[in-house]
Length: 482
Image (cartoon, rainbow, N blue to C red; front, side):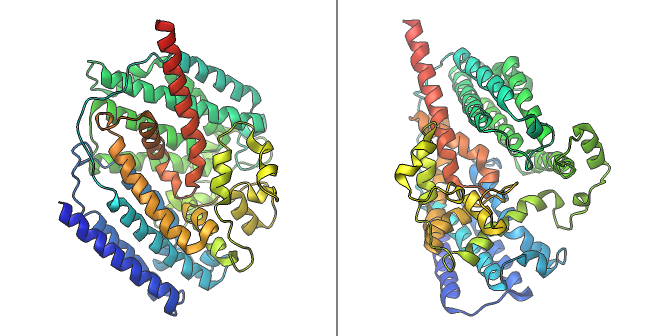
């Protein structure tokens, strides 16, 4: 088992060296042959990756793992548009937009280098696993529930009504609403995490989905339903995926069940259909008032051009469009703008502190909007203005590249591969002695689909605030018992 994984690491290191040689010394251009051989290389190294032997029993034969969920999102963001081009769904010009053929070809090669680096990082994490007795304690969740209620209603009170009624991507949510939204997420993550611990520490055996939801509490389910209703009305879909994965991983840990490939395909297929309908409905959103029910009806009846997106997987074509983040980054950095040298990770670290925007002028000379996050910087590269109506987003690769170029991608993806494997190991409470590691594992899992099109460091605030809520809830409940 160990030898098999060592061979896989050796193969990936060899492939990485060859890819770096091609990147630096071989002349290549974007054409059908280049795309074919790159996609073939992606397929081969991925098939080799899945030849790995899983030594941890709780992860064996379970499709819903951090690595699998992340790779789905990564393949969509990094390679789906190239596959669409090769199969004839889209024209070459649809890939270029305002960037050169060289940037597009280099972006595909860089994505492959990032993928191989991820595989290397995944395998260099040792499989240190020992079954033991969990050190986590059962703790009441009433205080966390009260916090969730307060943050939810504070969010509803402060959110921009124009944003709620179909205004996602058109109107701002509102500064206060953004803070209360994050606080609600942190409190709800804290709630579910503590519920999971309580369930595992009790003698109750949960079998059905109904018994699992009952253990969470109907009031807490209603709170989440209310929040997600606002999210759906606005046209956003990200939080639906995040909270669905949160409830799913909570169910799998609490019951000890595993979902194999067939069940997982059915679940992902149904979820994709629902998200596609919501995405098409969002395409009807305008700056004028629009009826959400009407938009859903139009979406079901395929009255939108978006319903006819030409792609091998139309449901994920919008997510796949995020490939432009790395394309524009490579096109303009460092030729027209210097690397950012870890500015965005530092910004995210400072962002853990509430109202930390007042600190930035003391840390950075230029506090322009484009330098506040990688997605704002990428938006500036694409749109050319610092405060556009709708942001263009970023990607994990672009986030690493903007800091230190190709070296940032190689070492960043090696670290991320190591982190993903570490999180998989920490998902089992009986193999976990630190609460913060369990929280990191849960949050990375729930964010894994969208991590390919976002910044890894943006999770630091949610992780920190969630840990603080769980920690102080434990201290307060313990104090009340005395």
